[in-house]
Length: 239
Image (cartoon, rainbow, N blue to C red):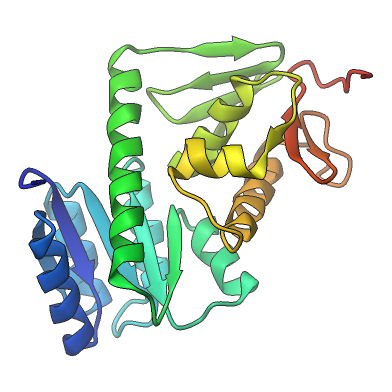
């Protein structure tokens, strides 16, 4: 049972919200709920949750704005966005404001529970690393788990939890191609063909932060038909 894990569920649809509360509680989690964005934001900032589930289209404040405001104060908490809008542009907007995962309605409750477990496990691993105050360096790339920051050639940038995990994963495989399947497994803890697009969207956000020119990246290179490779000195090595 997961009785020590508390999850906030924000959705303006009473039927969906009540169903999620029931199913998530039945899986052993504690739950709290909110029927609009303003209440969701207030509860998120006033309480300590282990994970937050946000519907996108809510009255008074949409899920994107709630997520963005939460990230300003609580950058580490896992956030899953729920929405009927499933285009790549919608997902990009969600990831840009700091969402860790994105589920399109209608979805299977087991799929949501899988993603909840994966994010909670990852967040717990992150806390253990942060408690060690670890700083990781490779060439011109440095990541600081305690503050979810990266330093690229002396330039400091703030990362989302997912961007941090992607960069950390790439640093464990320096100058070697990392497949999309490995990224999904090590960063999210699960994988499917559909989620490959999620990796690409997050990777685009990460590149926007650390690359001077995303069209000609120095550090994170695409490896055709495989995935990505990190070159920490900003020089692509010849194979």
